[in-house]
Image (cartoon, rainbow over all chains, first blue to last red; front, side, top):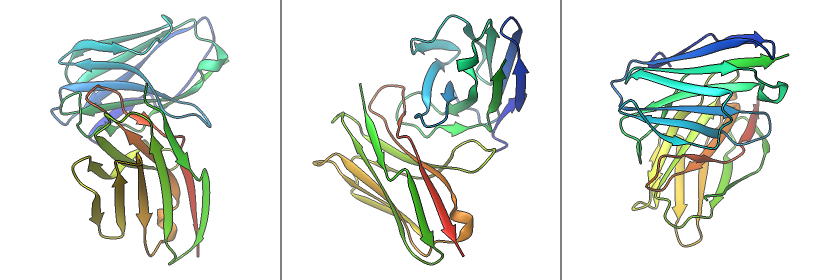
Length: 113
Length: 111
């Protein structure tokens, strides 16, 4: 699990706050992903970055803004979230973006009040 | 898009028994099928995967089978142990980026 790290592990924020989630991968991978995991629902892909370029935005609201400054780091900037955005946010990485094993971090448990 | 169905949603077995989790997928172009195990407070961890050119793969007590014609694949855990208790997810991927996940199976192995 140390291959992909995420901070913070837990976050409580109000609807007017701005916060950022951070992900770092130590595996030398070229692709990174953000997923949302809500209770009783499948993991939902949010964003995909390949070689630091966003290659997929899965109809995610603009209050979620990803940033990938280099192939090892991925951020998810949060602004004016809603209570229904409360979930576990998982970061993953893979060697390339298709047909490769994705390795997940431990996630950030987000609660929006 | 791809739709992955996973059953059962919960499964309770006695230690030493076998556990089987089944998934079906809708996109015939899917060619990569990983299985993940998620323990409480952790992210999903890959336990085994299979590609469409293979019908079965085994790794110690864990095996996966794939039936491309019927579009279903299954996870088999033999000689279950309490530490196998977790949530298991199947997924399917075609040539695109997305892993399409099932809703998960909560497995409980009782001593």
